[in-house]
Amino acid sequence: MKTALTELLGTELPIIMAPMFLVTNVEMIVAAAESGIAGCIPALNFRTIEELEKGLKEIKSRTNKPFGVNLIVNKSNILAKKQLHACLDAGVDFFITSLGSPEEVIKESKNQKIKVLCDVIEEEYAKKVEDLGADGIIAVNSGAGGHLGNIPASVLVPALKSKCKIPVISAGGVGTGSGILSMLALGADGLSIGTPFIATKESGVSDDYKKACIDYSAEDIVVTTKLSGSRCTVINTPYVQKIGTDQNIVENLLNKNKQLKKYAKMLTYYKGMKAIEKAAFSATYKTVWCAGTSVEFTTEVGTVKGIVEKFKSEFAVAEQNLLKTLGRI
Image: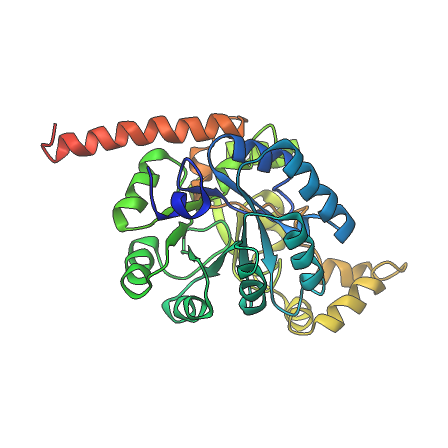
C-alpha cells in the first residue's frame, strides 16, 4: 500500500483520518499516528490559540509520527493567521486547507517544508491550488460525510488525476478495506476517511452520537443546509426529522449575513427571544450529528487502531479476491 501519499507524508498506509469538526481530538490524533496513518485535527476544535498550542505540544510529546491540522482559510475564520503561526511554530507535518484561498498557508509552509493539501470539489479549483504550489489535493466527492462535493469519486478521482500532477486523495464514502482498494484502483494516491472513526473509544463525542453511528445505516444519511447554509450530510434522527433539512427564511437571511447572525445569537440570550432561537438555531453541531454513508459499516464502538487493522485485513482479502477474479492466482 505504498503510494505517493505515503511518500509525501511518511506514513505506513495511504490513509488520512479526516479532520472532523468537534469530533477529532488529541487522543484520536495520537492513536492514528501510532497506527500507521496520518490524523488531521481542525484548528477550530480548540477554542483558543492557547488551547491549540497546548494541544499540539501534547501531540508532539506523545508521538513522533506525522500528523496535520485543518485550517479554514476564508474570512469567516478570524483566527486563521494566528492558528497558522501556532502550527508553524509547533512544527506540524502538514495542513489541510478548506474554504478559501490557501495561498498564504502554502507560501509560509514552504519555508519549513511543511506539506499543504487542499480540499477541492472540482477540477478548476484543483488546478488553481496546484498552480499556487499545493503538495496534494483532497478530492471531496459526493459520498463525503459533513460538507460534501457534487461529483462521485468514480468520476472526480480519474478526472483530477488526468489534469493534475500532484497527489490526489479521495475523500468520502469509504469504510472498508475493499473500498480502499477500489479508490486506489481508480487512481487515488490515498484516502481521507472520517466517519468510521467517530464511534471509537478515543473519540470525545457523546455516547448517543456513537450509538447513532451504530444504529443508523447509509439510507439514514440525509443532506441538510440548516447547519451552515452549505450542503452537509447528517444522521436522520427524530430531531432532524422534526426540524427539517431545509433552511427557513430567518436561517437563510442570517447565513447570508454573518454580522446579523452574530447579533441574533446575542439576542437569544435575553428572555423572550426564544422564538428567534427556535427559528434560526435549531440545528447545531451538538444536536445534529454529521456522518457519511460509510456509517453503514460501523457495528460497534471500537478503537482507532482496531479500525486501521480491520482496514488492512479487509484490504488483503479484497486484493486476493480481485486477483482470483482476474485469474492471476
